[in-house]
Image (cartoon, rainbow, N blue to C red; front, top):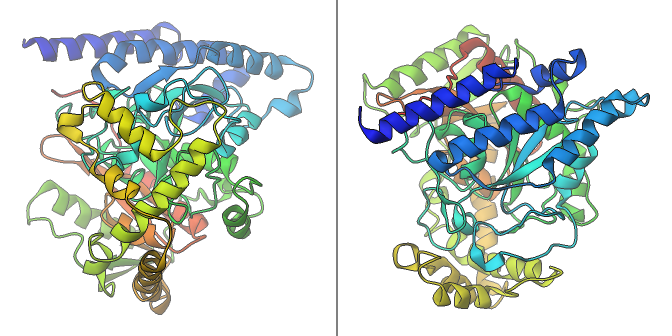
Length: 508
């Protein structure tokens, strides 16, 4: 047996043995099963954190999903166990109480963990406070397990992609190790797929949740922009940045979504505007097995063009038929106006607006840190030039950084570009959905992410199959702002009727 394959087999065997040895199957454990274990006494938070720390120590040298683990995680878990056993039981009854969560490395924590976007330039920097979504997770009783690897600077240093960062190395797809894991929420998706954490958080500007979730066979929710606070998250653009869960099941992702949505005074206008979309009673009520019945689902032209007879072509055709059988009204061959322009960031205004927005947003974030080795984009560029080996400058460069540094704010050209983007979106998907009274559109993987990103629209991707070589692919349900309830209904119903997801195979 070749050495790389032997190593994979040994790692997988050790992990499975570890899971069984403790009497609780960690692999694929859901939030509901974890809480059941907590409540019947077969599991403690401390046990669970130890399971995941052991699993990370065994799998991370292979997958590079985690940048660092929290030295305080076991203490947080012990506190959650104590609260669960206390007489004040009602205060410790949340679904995430004692559940370990892994955070993408651009989400700030005010603790022993670094927040670096995968770069050595921010190593040792100190934030003033937890990110808004982290405050909510802690309030829900979640245990912060560590920081997940990512495309360095969320793939906005250069468009190299592929899940590499200087601090975390090159992330690897747990299904087929040579396949791309995608990004930029690479480590979050890998860790969720390989059961290296109970649940994870990612961020998206354009495809950064939807793509890695799809290609690592997990569920990713990209919320409406403003539904979750961006305060304390290393930014790209306030127009499009959003934070959402990446988990193994729709139900788990919805548990996390319920915990992190809401108004934040540190991200006031977007979170206030989006708070009107949050349903009374939360999102768990929309986990309905009949959630496809009566839904009007659009199938836009140009996305499912897979050659006849391929695994993807046959699987997607079967999935569309399954949705029909579940009572959905499938409206096919719909044309999104100006689709080619919406998908062409070079010519739709994004390449004018995004660099300027990034420089302003990043410099603002850096200026608010209690301590940082760098205080501006210009200083990060200089750091990379001074550390070409560590930052892999020969291969990855920093072309996007240089373009952004050359901008001078939001001027007339940037305002015109943003106005053009808004018009394209209004006359594109928004118009199509309203004219046809659609509840959602369905597309493969993250194919429609750029269309959704422009107007801050939400989406959920669910595992849909595995290609000829075993590489996963997903099905994405996308909708208008605030459509999360109906997207959850459809995604959950689809997941429950298809049950596509398999555990990782670690194929070399």
